[in-house]
Length: 547
Ligand code: C2E
Ligand code: CA
Ligand code: CA
Image (cartoon, rainbow, N blue to C red; front, side):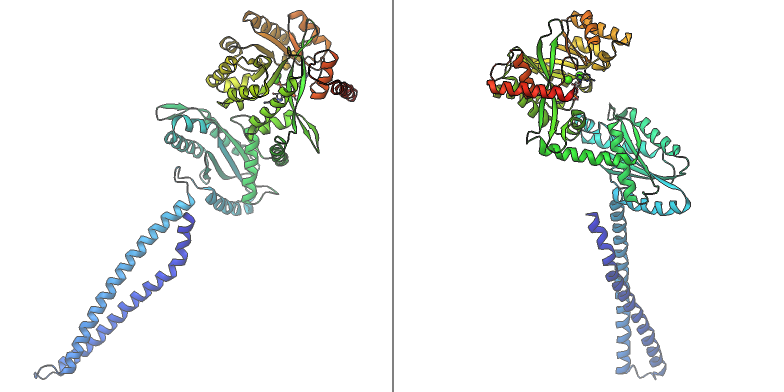
């Protein structure tokens, strides 16, 4: 709409100017005519001999009156046009203001920032200066908006805008690019980039503080990506793109971080986009498959279950680890679909195992925000006719901390359905002990970072001991994960009656290998002999390959 209003200005101007000229011309012509006819009437009156005015004299007077009328008309028309011109000028100024600024905060908009930024670059570069661009994205703005309404959201955006503008130098540009994304740009001495960092830090420090919005305290936070003009980055487009890439990196590093652009980020972003595209095609076509890591009863050495770990069996790139694609699936909203499809395949597989075996599946923090999660899982269990008691959902402490009330509700509905719940990566959160008491948990899984260090680090061993005794007191089972060698296994054996998993007992393996493993132990029910034999062969080959 703004574009349209701006576009009308220049093309309308010549037409109006012509009309101005015409009105002025008519008025001037009328004035000249009045003067000429007045002179001629004057002459007639001097020659009059008292016998009255002749017909010609009458004509001259009529012309004079006509001219006066014309003159008045022209003058009025000129005034009216002048007024119209003023109105249009004011409307145009407003339109151009609207076209260059964000109506909510009064900051520049994206286009105006790009235009003004390009001009600043032209001024700064010849003087050996540099232009810094900060791209700022608010964290948790959406939840404030959802919880307290759009008016509160608008208020918060205005407050955030003030917080961004406050530490900026005088000649800085500041813009709201849309939603909760802001940017600012200012020249700085390229020998002193710390000046730029101080500005970014001041913005981050303010964003960490609560904002008083309509009687409530809103807590947000922000991430800042920074880029600067330098060889290879001399246009506003590159500068904006680079600061955007840096922002993405800052967000990935966690909340309230700033990051300078560096060229490795660009490649990383391309890779991320490739992964996302690959997942969009790969999930529905079944490329993401469950692998199974055995869980062992340490006292007896018996397999008591498996943890399901997703693997991407990529047609071109081979097997891809979850560390590569789970974060991308999480960010791009694909994790729910991915996890459910892996869970479905895993359950289908586990139906062929000894019914005493537990199947443990991982749920990411993002999935814990889905109010229908428990229903979706129950539906899957019903569809595949799999007993709820055999399924265990692993929830991380991080997911709990993010939204405790909601997470507790989900856990309660899972438990109501008879599904088991385990707390994963235990010990890495902050209020661990409180969680253990407050939740109806079946198991805690001691994070592998502690288990791995047990042998050489007395503190880690002490912590493992403490968790085990605490859990026993609360009647919660304990799983120690990351048991890489016999030494760790022996130490754990001294501590208590635990379930263990880790490379010492067996790495995650594909379904057919797992089938072979179970067949060898007589823990398989529904497989044909040939399938089992095939599984055993595949398993041996897998072992040889790893050795
Ligand atoms: P996690 O749930 O903590 O899974 C345990 C990880 O530790 C697995 O890595 C496993 O291979 C590895 N591990 C097992 N034994 C040892 C050991 O002895 N030493 C060491 N150093 N590591 C060991 P993996 O398979 O790469 O999975 C990484 C993470 O990806 C998992 O961490 C889990 O959070 C996530 N993940 C995997 N599959 C899924 C899935 O289907 N859905 C979701 N939401 N997350 C998944
Ligand atoms: Ca896990
Ligand atoms: Ca874990």
